[in-house]
Image (tube, rainbow, N blue to C red):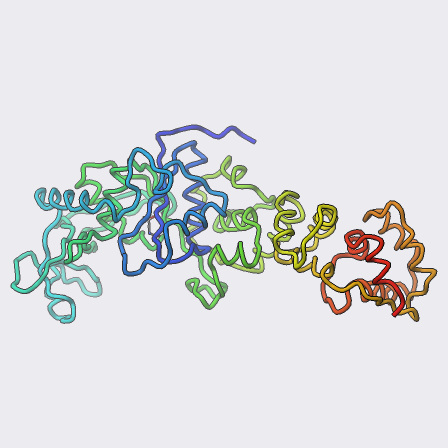
Length: 458
Ligand code: GLU
């Protein structure tokens, strides 16, 4: 693997809002932001974007747990601290208000007294440039009695704003098309537009990777950075994931939270990362870990089209991941937690080797251990499976999966009866179960005594 470059001057951040558990879309953005920083040996900062308290539904710890479950780490953040804290936007409002005063004093922002937009005609009158079809808001700077003003960014009267996005390339907009976005609400709380730029500038952020839903706000953010006298970070906007129907991902596609996928469905985090981080890039045939991905990562190669999130592709990749890349330790730990009965060390070892090539998730591994929870009652149909077929299998020594596989092959040779006989074996060992591990794996995990009890004639 090539050496990673080390450039501690690169500072990238991820700024999640605590409005819900991380979704596949959020997680992908976080992964790309992390890879962008780690590929350059920079520092990764985690900042809580809690500017919209009304929509908060999860705790900051929940978000850390989700990012941690993905295998991400960070050098600075609200939980680990750092030299640029606090790392919760809500704790920085004094700073935001002080900056707002500076912006007003410098002419970069003004109080807008446009009455609340219940009255559309008043809203329209507030536009300085009434260009047909353009939704460009310009405020009313003259005080109006009874109106609590919002603070707006002042957009210059003429000229263009130019900025290069690392994914979308050169962006050049006429200021006439740029809305004067709100920087502070009428109750004095800063908006994302103000807080995010101030925090990025204060935290020395050089690299921002965020969802393309913010691309339209980029010109305004460039103006805010300039007004702050700060360098504009290098921006990379990532096209948002869409569902199979090409529409925005929504609850219709099921529970799209990382927590659901990892905890409930048991998708290995490594597989999820390999899938999500590759969406929008040229498809890879290998199954890289995050560190392997970081060695060649270049966000400039990300396509501009919205990639499709396809649970079937994720499942196929997860299957391969479990067969080829998942560590035995992790699979063993998951099996212990997810199996319906307590497993001995020997049983875990047998199952790890015996199931890893036939499961799409850890949950499926737990399900495959279900046969161990059944009663050891006699279950052999002697009309299909005679004593002389079963006895040599039960006499196998050493009692291990390889020897048992060979014994079964010898006792049930190829021929017209083979399928029925193997089926009868299975019915005796795991009556009523639709999915089971292969016979030799079940036998090895049961041990000779329990296997003999189940293979006794009914
Ligand atoms: N909380 C915002 C989001 O999740 C942050 C965007 C950003 O990274 O600046 O979309």
